Image 1 (cartoon, rainbow, N blue to C red):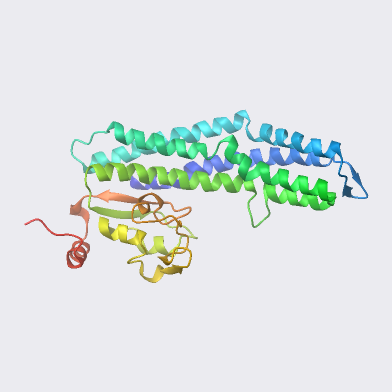
Image 2: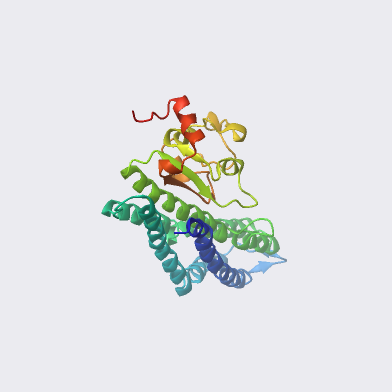
Amino acid sequence: MDLQDKIDRLKSVPDDLVSAMGKVENDAMRKVLGLIESLETESGVILNNSFNLSLISAIEQELKSAIFSNSYYKSLSNFSTEFEVQASLNNAYFASIIDDFVVLKDFTTVMEASRNSALSLLSEDAFSQALIKPIQDSLLSSVIGGGSITDTLKSIRQIVIGSNDVDGRLISHVKRVAYDAFAIADRQYTQAVGNHHKFEWFQWFGGKVSDSRCFCIEHHGKYFHRKEIEGFGEGLGIGNCSVYSSKLLRNGWQGMNENTTKITIWSYAGGYFCKHSILPVSQFVVPKEVIQRNIDSGNYQEAA
């Protein structure tokens, strides 16, 4: 199989969902603006009255109808299916390096759990926290405090669609979930298979983009022993990319998920928006100098 196809999908699959949400964002903004313009004002100041307070509830319902449309659920269904496709690509890879490779039920269970976790972050409750509640809070403050209708419109527009430099809450939430959750699901699946077959050697494999972090640039395409990767999760052996984090009270790297440990690095890899895989590989493809490095460090002992 072409490994690059698998890696490319870590970007292209979430891209499709994010692109579909662009129309949802525009529909939401249009409906919200229409209702906000109906707020009762006096000399450009929003009045604190029952009509305006009741309109906040109406805006909430309009937002939900705009976001959770048939188009959204179709896009979400397509996204859900891609987890199975990605698992199939991983199976093809493992079949190429493991004799008589068999897809166990445990592997499928890992894929389904990862997918369910991702979909839960794209649920109605999740969107309420990410988008709808901030809008409600902003509108309530404007009505109670007698805010300017101009300032209120500007504030809501910033929340919904953002600016040239910052995504709105809707797209920002979908991007974070789609890219991270899909890549994490891919890595968790390969981790499950790798652990079952007791792989010791791995390749840090993926594409480099213009904003790739130092950590992934340094590790891209290189081979490592399991213990070396676990060390990365503890802030060890990360060289020039090392950045001290007062929150973690240890070294990490720019863009690292703050929950990274020697266990979770197999899921988080380089961190937020990372599109790299930690691929189990046969020892026969590992460069001799890498094996020797790990013999010298005590990570690995050759069979007698």
